[in-house]
Length: 596
Image 1 (cartoon, rainbow, N blue to C red):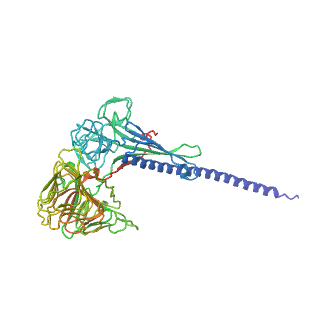
Image 2: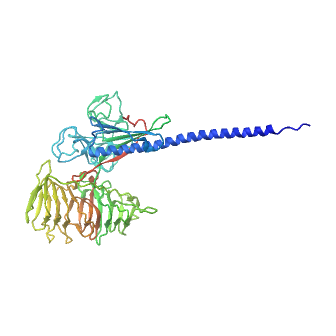
């Protein structure tokens, strides 16, 4: 019998193995290629988002510094710009990039600025007031705030807890629009006591619109300010909206696939200097030797502090903040009742808890917090926000010499421009009967210390701000107002509006026992000492806010009644930027806008 050869079988097996390996390799290469493409697109998506964020920062800077010239194209009150980024920044990926920007209601002149009682406004001027944007529809009398609907029309915008709403304001919440029927803050729609439903349909080219009609377009709300048909938002002749930045990042791969885009939309507002009742960039120490401190809040636009005690909407919004990331605790709160929040930087090790310390009698609560425990941990944060703005110099001031032992009058009631004064040395009110009375808007530059105390605590030495006055007071030396004896010497702000008085200190003595505020005269105002240690001592009652490098309550109780209107207030004397208060990535085609 003839033997069969095995060579052919072996060859066939070998060929089959090679074929299988070839198929597997081809499949692997195909999968690898697809994975590489997906990986490239994922990377490109990250790049597009980073580009959009980069553009947002560039536009916000332009808005803050009003630099919409040069590379920006301006049409009406809309500014646009295209940015190119060198592709080498993204390695050898072959990605080409672009950033497209659009800013509606860009900052210029009286457009998109905080309202000021010192400015004369005309039709179409655009201002921010208590957290709401307003368009002037008729030149108002001097000092006529935007709450008067005869002269001002509010832009519709998403509801915010810290905005103060006036009758006629339009807010959006939960996809619906609401009209304010009673002045309020922190009262969310659809509360029938304060809000009524308001129609806000998508814009249509075939609809005839009347004044005060509200539409949605590209995800934004617009209010009609002039009747028309077929005039698409954001045409500012016909439509009113909040200032908005659109930023689109585009990343294009070299494989010929469709560009990958990310579009962001940001609503803009002035950044507040005083979002906290008491804020220390380093250490906040509230540890009185006797008594109990009260830290709570009210809204001065809605009435007096006394009328709002216990009000769930306005009395529980104070924030204490300590910012040190190296000292533990950065916020110590003892013998205190805190109606609101405590915020402190987190520890550097797990579980990264806030650097806080609470005395046994301290309570931190909301209106609805349980009786136990004393500190509601939902009211304790590890994300303190403590703004630090550059201080402006005072120029063009007239030399002021105070009358010793008697009154000195400055400022003009009804003036629309502040009178500027400089004291070439200390502001000393230390003789019985020595007073400084401010009748109108005033900027005062003290090139030395502020010392208000006559040695007996009888209350004879004061700065008096009349109901027609306001004061921006700068000083470079020591702050010493009142005395541990229980002094009624101090600052008598008869406007009862904390926004009418700011004290700005540039002294850098940052140790306890140098700067003292211990007047028992109720203080309506704010104190900003970014580089110093401020001691609050001796039954002080502050209606406003304080911000310093370090803050200490080393003696008897101090009460701070924070005015929540400060969260939307702007002050002179500092370089205040603008901030983003709502940010959205636009993924729904109905919300995106065409850029460029």
